[in-house]
Length: 58
Image (cartoon, rainbow, N blue to C red):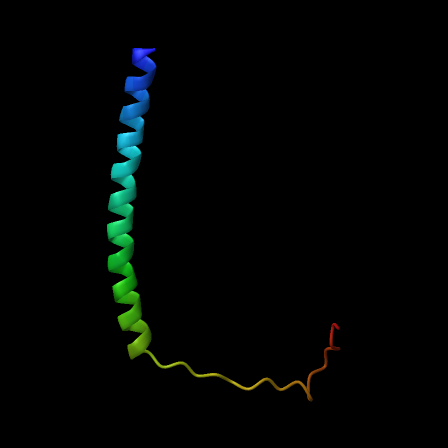
């Protein structure tokens, strides 16, 4: 019983450590992606549905 709880506590500790490392790295990536989005420009092309050869599905 003691062995089970000791292994369980070790696994929970490793899980918490990995969670914190993952959370810290994701917040850094989020800051970088926000900077990249604000710097980039997006071109939106209009849809040309009138000249399309395909029929509308709905």
